Each structure stands twice: as C-alpha cells, then as structure tokens.
Amino acid sequence: MENEYLSLREIQLAELHILKQFISFCNKHSLRYSLYGGTLLGAVRHKGFIPWDDDIDVMMTRPEYEKLIELIKNGSSIGKNLIVSSPELQESPDFLFMKIYDKNIKVDAVNGIDSNYLWIDVFPFDGIKNPPEKELKKILRLRRIFLSKRLQETKRYRKDTKKSRKIIGTVKRLPLKLISYPKLVKYFVSKCKKVKYGTTEYVCDTVWARHPGNILKKEWLNETVKVSFEDIKANAFGGYKEYLESRYGNYLELPPEKERITHEMKAYRIDKKNKL
Image (tube, rainbow, N blue to C red; front, side, top):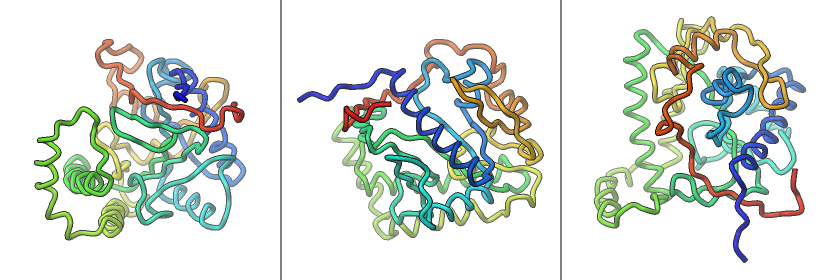
C-alpha cells in the first residue's frame, strides 16, 4: 500500500501541533523560550509560517535549555506521541541540539536524505567571546568534523549522490574511525558550552549557527514579547527586530522565488486514525 503523503500545509499544521504542546509545557514549568530563525521571520512578516517553509525553530538560553533537559530526565513529558532527542538525553543523538519528534508522522526524505519523524528544533544559546565572528569560525571547523562523522555513522547520503563520491567520501573519513561518535558529540557540546551564558556581551546558537547574523547581543534576550503565529500567541525575544535585520536584511521584503527553499520532505501518518 502506497503512503499517503501530507501536503505542505498539512505538514505545517502538524508541526504547529508539536509547537503548541511545547509552549504549553514551557508555560506550565515557567521556562523561557522564543521563536527563532525562519519561524520568527514568518511570525513577523506573515503572522504564521513563511508560505513555503516546512519547519519550526525555537531557541532557549543555555540555562533555560538545561532546565528543560532536567525536567525530561526526571520523567516529565512534553506531549502526547512526542519523542525528544538531544545530546544530553542520548549517546547517539540525531544532532547537536534538541529535536522534538511526532512519532505518528514518518518522514522518509529530507533533501533526498532518509530521516525519522516530523520534528521541531530547539536551539540552546551559549555565550561567545569577542570577536564573536572569529570564535564562530572555530566552532564551524569543528562542526564540519562532526557532520563528517555523523555521515560515517548513519550513511545517510542524498539519494542522488553518485557512487564515486560515496567511495571518495568514505576514504576521506577513514581517520574518523579512530574517534567514537558519542565522545565527539560530547566534546563538541562541551566546546559550545565553554563560555558561560551571561558572562559575555554576545551569545550564539554555537551548536548550529552557520551565519554571523545568528550572533546576538545578550541584552536582546533579556525580555520577551508576544507575536502572532498562526492561531496562537508565542514568545519572541525583545531584540527580534535587530536580529531579523542582521540575519535577513530587509526582512519584510519577500526573497526571489529561487531562494524560497524547503526541506522537500515527504511525510505521512503511520496511524491515519490519529489525526489532528
């Protein structure tokens, strides 16, 4: 029987359902969070999802993120049918930050790479020393090693990857066999957490930042405001306008069509009776 794939809008609404449960959990436990990245941009520019976007990004300061981790370790559940993955909770996590999956919705292709379940991302923010751009470059070099090791472990190549490139990549990554995946993850996260949050002028999602626009002034996160996102009100950090301008430039202007990128994911419900 062929899978009945969800439309982009159905994917968005399913992710929104995860976000609602996450927000409810944060409110219950007095945890501070903020919409982030394209999700925050969508809230400001579209009062919801960017029309072509297919993921949700949330951020927390490292102290708040660690409170969340402790609650989960002690048995608290964020919501029904949800699985939480993070380096602090598993030895071999999917990524270096938290992902909250809906185990009822399988995703079998993201940009041609096999995945797990539909998710939202939760990024921890750490302190970063001056000059922050230089420090971020150091982190990016280490992250490239992590990504190579992850590919070695999972063998999740794009489906259009040529066999010759797979062979060359496998040979290049052979030295990484000497490093265990759990130890590399632990080392990377320890490097990201090295600068204690609150001790520097700038902060960053060092576990995944690829753009200097993701380096924020700590003072921008001192308070939160409410913004509209679809049919709910969600938190945005106080300096969100400065961040959006730094990250996206004229963020109220739509980008050219060729830059309107999605994950190209193919998602379907495992239990069709359990619909939203």
